[in-house]
Length: 185
Image (cartoon, rainbow, N blue to C red; front, side, top):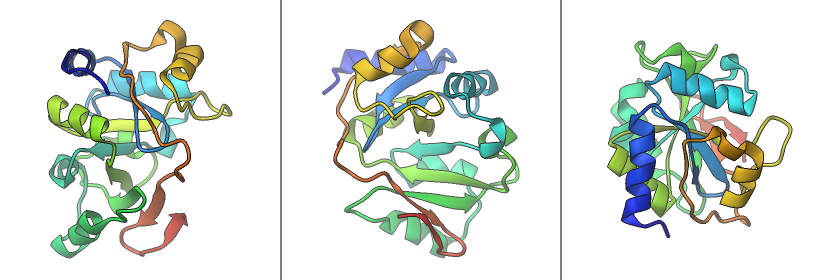
């Protein structure tokens, strides 16, 4: 588990407009402050991911995600209920002021309340949601360790928060909040 000093370093990098890697439930993620357009562009460039695809945001809890989503109270209960045995990413209508660099070409945005204890701490200490996309260049396997992240990105990241992922867990389910359709199970 990361030390308080390591968490402070990760938060310091985020607040300075940096891009970091951190463990999520199943793989390492690349992340940044979602409201920092330059940092988001760096994430997209590192991933070789087109802007049009949009990104996932993670938070320690639902209130950290509310500034980005436009849903009613009943739908929020669905997000809170989640799937305890498995992380669930929700495709939600985006608020009108949600930046296009997060949504891509979509009127919606993907969000997840993270179940990883270290990542929850990171979001809490940062004070908000983070961009979360798997830490791998396009067409490469997602990284399950900090060593693999370093191999992929070497000195291009501002910080790597070491921690553990459950390499045997399935990737998060992706569910459209409005239709209830499961996009990935």
